[in-house]
Image (cartoon, rainbow, N blue to C red; front, side, top):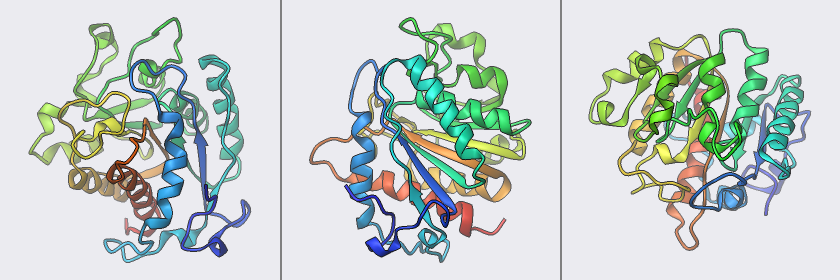
Length: 284
């Protein structure tokens, strides 16, 4: 597995030189149906060399900003231990004043990341793209289960949810319908884009569960849910977010590769690169 992000190994950038850090957390300990999110980062890195590193839309080559890949966080002892380890590591990385990006693993890895960002940024918005609301206060005897990924954020940050189309009744007390854009309500429309962005504060942390996307283009997730966002809608929306807000970091989670099915692998690599292009190469 290559550990550089560019066209050749000469493009390897040191921690000190890089503007962008990529931290993987290959944890898949609480997922309750399809497994394999712990294998996602390896497939992602093996796919990256097949990207065209020139982005037509932004007329840029964002990898030249320097993307440094950090050693994996290999904590698997318990959901609680993963949370604490990820929290402390994220706080440490935030002190470096780099643009931080994270790659799961399951969605529970985001709990510690978001808490670290909340401690640094006053009035933080968390933008969640997801098929599931993930607002359970506890699941399978842990508040750090993947089904609880945004519960803490719903109480401590300005949480905006997009693409939701599955939830349990126990989550209803924690759902703010004024800031939740259900998939069935946004399908075939665009006014929700500006409306949701208007609800955000200046600083935004973005968490993307890949099951937010329609399983016809992204079947490689633990719990694929019918319906969902298409590629063009997703990137058009995210470009607007990056143009109007200060996106302070992001994670991509729940990528569970399927052997022999390469299109979703490439989609994930392209999505990651697009987000960086929007952050560094799109005019505000």
